[in-house]
Amino acid sequence: MPIIRLYCNISDWEPDFQQLLQCLCRIQKDEISRLKGILTLNDFKLSVVGRLLLRKAVSSSLSVGSNCLTFARDSRNKPVLVKPARYEDPIEAVSFNVSHQGNIAVAVSAIRYQQHRVNGAHYEEVVNSIGVDVVAFNCIKNTRDIVKELFVYKPFFNKEEWIKILHSKEPLKYFCRSWSLREAYVKATGSGLGTNLSSLKFRQLEEAEDTDIVCQSTRLVVNSALVDEWVFEQSYLEKNYCVCVAIKNYKSEFGSDYRQNRQQNSNTENESRREKMFNFQGIEIDSLLASVTPLREYTEDQEEVFQLLKLFF
Ligand SMILES: CC(C)(COP(=O)(O)OP(=O)(O)OC[C@H]1O[C@@H](n2cnc3c(N)ncnc32)[C@H](O)[C@@H]1OP(=O)(O)O)[C@@H](O)C(=O)NCCC(=O)NCCS
Image (cartoon, rainbow, N blue to C red):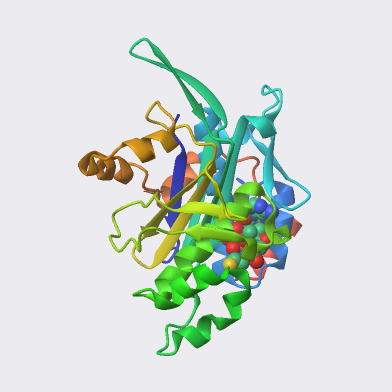
């Protein structure tokens, strides 16, 4: 099973009370409690959709019903899988992650280790860990003095990268791509705020102006050493967003080590055809709801959910 990459755009979604209730009955109770601190309806919708996308993505990876899955959080708040119990160690079975910003929520999921048999030959697919980050280009005002707007983020970047951002053709876009690289990486490692971000250097070999292409040429350098076990897939979603998937120890969906392919495949036509295959799959909210099985029935008089939804209606 290849890596699952899903996204949902919520900009046209105007849920009524009943539809949100339908969403909440598909989300674990402890995760509903986490939604309580959310202040705006937009953030609420994004967080709800993120949780639904995650259930769909992980259940597709594992080929189990979404209602069989139980998630928990690790010490750094990263969602982890604790059930189905048929896996000896569910945390080790699958790696996944979620991100949301603006009007977009994304989720990625991959089985950590699989063996395939294709035309009599055995292939391994290994994804040690995976992280994702989506960034809206309008998250920062694109004023004439964009350098000033970006200045506050300077401490998160190493000097060389920062100079590249400022001198790129489109500093805001380049900045967002650089930001998403960092976030996807820290989310894959799960280290979150504990990471010294300026110690990471992402060598982006392309500005990637073609919005249809998934760029995979970026390399990570830590303390001057190339960290070759990481692959970064950078692409655009609906033109106004960039998304990055960080994948550790990637052995590919194509039956051989992705990193070797990356170096050996000089046939650009093949390369770009293959790159397009990595794109995210968009899903409408109705199909998302239809593909995630309810965990329980909610009736409107259930106090906790009612109180939560009342905040927005
Ligand atoms: C954890 C962290 C990476 C989340 O990033 P974010 O951009 O705020 O939010 P995203 O929408 O991308 O991701 C949120 C989701 O990530 C997941 N998540 C939470 N903690 C996580 C962690 N430690 N590792 C991986 N994923 C995590 C959750 O599913 C969360 O969804 P929820 O809020 O609906 O529960 C962020 O809080 C963090 O630690 N950032 C530190 C890095 C930093 O300072 N970056 C500056 C970059 S230049």
